[in-house]
Structure formats: structure tokens, C-alpha cells
Image (cartoon, rainbow, N blue to C red; front, top):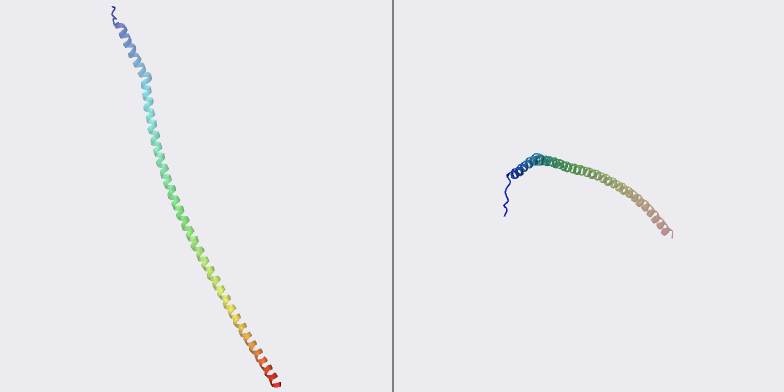
Length: 142
């Protein structure tokens, strides 16, 4: 049987090649890869911070716009209430004026009616007296 001998030159040569490959890979691949990963993590953190700041700004703007909207609604309600009150006051004045005018016309009509009624009554009394006189004259002459 033949024994396999370990060749020291081959062993040291393989070890040397392994170490050289390890150093070359470390310098050319692993270190740049680690630097790239670290830079990427920093960029991600910066973008997260920027996004958080933007979100805070947006929330602030949203709160401001909501406050403005609430104020605008309140002003609109106040203006509407004021306009309604003024319109009601004007309508009440117009109603009172119309009512006064109507009452005046009713009073005028009542006065005119009373005048005409008294004139008719006087006229009827005069006619009644004439008729009575004529009837009495006819009765006396008959």
C-alpha cells in the first residue's frame, strides 16, 4: 500500500494562495461592500428623518387648514345669522307698514261708509216723509 504523503510545499502554497485571495477579496469586495451598506443605511435614516419632518409639516398645515375652515364656517354662520336677523327686521317693518296702511284704509272705508250710510238714511227719511205726506194727502183728498 502506498501512503499518501503530505507535500509541505503544496500545503504552504495553497495556504499562501488562500491568504492572498482572502486579502484581495477583503480589499476589493468586502470593504467596498461594507462601505456601500453603511452609506445606504445612512441615506435611509436621512430619508426617514426627512419624511418624518415632512409628515410633521403636513400635519401642521392640515391643522392650520382645519382651523381656518372652522373659522370660515363660524364667520359664515355669523354672517348668515346677521343677514337673517336684518331680513326679519325689515320684513317685520314692512309687515307693520302694510298693517298700518291696511288699518288706515279700513278706517277710511269705515268713515266713507258711515258718511254714505248717514246720507242714505237722511235721503230715505226725506223720501219717507214725502211718501207719508203724499199718502196723507191722498187719504185726505179721497
